[in-house]
Length: 458
Image (cartoon, rainbow, N blue to C red):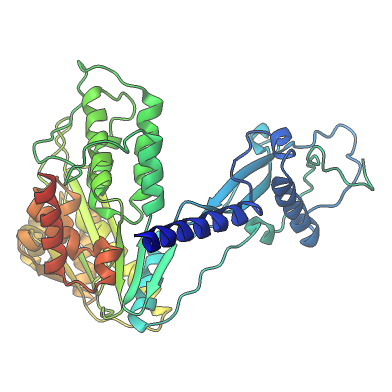
C-alpha cells in the first residue's frame, strides 16, 4: 500500500513538474488588448518574433507618408495554440492590417485569397495512406508574406514597437491515417454549455420534420448562427451529420425554439461521439466511385428535394454534399458526375488513370434516361445539365450502375436515419474512432462496440 501511494505521488509530482516547467516558456492566457500582452514577457517575445519575420522577409520599408495619405491602422491578434491534451504549446502574435477601413473602388479593386479545396487534401491523404507513405506536417509562419503587390500601401507601425531609427492534425500509423477534430469538438461543447448534456445516439430523430414554425418562440439569432457555423466547420471530418446541420441552417434568418432544439440534438450526439473522425486505410484500393441520392419533395415549405452525393477513393471518403435542389429535376446526378470528373483529373497528377468510373444511383428512371436514346424525345423538359451525364456515359467516362436503396451510401445525406442504418452507413463511409482503428477492430466489431455502449447508457 505504501509503495502504491509513493508511486502515485511520484507520478503526480513528475506530471506537475512537467506542467510548470512547460508553462515557464509560454503564457497560458490570451490577451484581450496590447497593454495586457505587454505585461507578460512570453507574449512580448511572440510579438518580437512576428516583427522579425516582417524584417527578414522584407515586408515593408519604413518611410515618411506622403501628403494627404491615410495610413492603414494595425492590430495585434493573440492566440494560444494548444496540443491535443489541451496544454498550450505556442503563443502566436499576429500583426494584421485593419483592412475594414478601406472602401472597394477607392482603396482597392479586388481581393483574392488562394486556398486549397478540402477534397484535394482528402485525396492526398487517401493516396498517401494507400501507398504507405509517411506524411509530414509543417507549420507555415506568415504565409501571406509569399505574395507580392505592385501598389504602394501605407501601414502604421504597431504601438510600442516603433523602429528605433524611425519614430495553427493529422494521426498517422502503419495501418493508415486518422483525421479528426476531437479537441475542437470538446471546445464547442464547452462554448455552448453542452458539455453536461445527455448524449444522443443519432444527430437527428427520424420523426423530425422542421418547417418555418412562424408561431414558435424566437431564439437568439446570434447564438443560433454561431452554433450552425461551428458545426459546419466540424463537418470537414464528420460527414455523418452534414444533412442535419444543413437542414437546420435553412432557418438561420428567423430561428425558433424547434430549430434550436434540433441543433442542440446534434451537440448531444457529439457528446456521445466526440472522438470520431475519418479513417484512410493503408489497405484501401485506389478505385474511384460515386453515389447519388435524393429524397422525394422532402422540404415542407417548397416541396423541393434534398440531394446527397459522396465520392470515395477505394474505401476512403473524399468528398460529399447535402443540399436542397434549386429546382425539381434530375440535376442531382449532374453535381456528382462533375465532382467525379474533377477527381479523375486531379488524380491524373498522381499518376493514376481510370477507365469507366462506377456511378451508383438507386433511381432506375435516371439510368434509363441516360442510357436509352428512345426516351430522349420525351425528356426535352429536363434540365440541359442532365444530358451532360448522358454525354459522359456515352464517352465512356462513367458507368451508371443501379444500387439497392439499403446500399446507397448517399442516403445519409438526404434524410435522418434510424440508429441501425445510421451506424452501418457511418461505418461504410469510414467514420470511426481512433481507439477502434488502433486496436485493428473489423467493421462488425466496431458496430457491436457502439451497440454495447448504447446498452450501457440505456
